[in-house]
Length: 253
Image 1: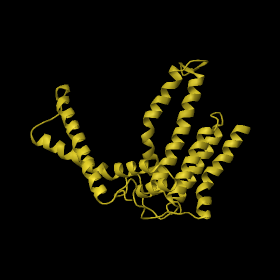
Image 2: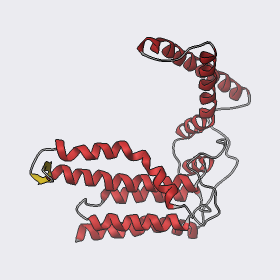
Image 3: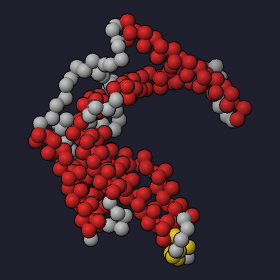
Image 4: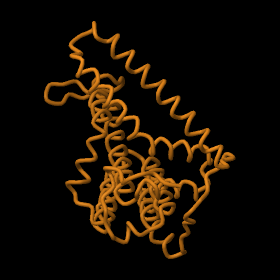
């Protein structure tokens, strides 16, 4: 199973985190996110501890803070949503700098920002230390439905192909003097999108026929069998286990 070249989120390295089997890192990231989401929003100190834990993982993985913070910009739409919550939520209100804000909205905004940021940071660290091909092997090792793994594999493999097709179509339009300047040009863009869909569909049919002619029967052959030792599992699960202790303390205090 292949997945092409490394993705832009991946940061090549030889750290202990990079060396962990992909399915152990996937399980650790998933469990960490579940623990973070389960933490009561009032335990603000717990989220600070979670951030320290992720910072420790980033340091061990040799992922620079600038790299990590730059990738966190993907959550900007969620931040915008969270900022609006204190203004639109109902219930008890407080006045801050002349603004009337909902108490429930403030807690809700904090809940979204804290848990969302930590979840995105964990995902970025996972992507920064694991190649796409390894992620797919990890998903397969964790017994994710094979059809979903194959769909993800083909999406990654042919994403660049479709993007290049879009680029060639854009160059062809521009070479004929076309420039999208307003609503009147939307029809041309819609026809281009339709043509791109048809080309992608036909390419998929050709690839499927080529696979069937080579013996494809619904499952992809596994070339690399990824395994993990007990020590590797303990290293990977140390993050969610530490987070679980913090979560339990958050509920108790």
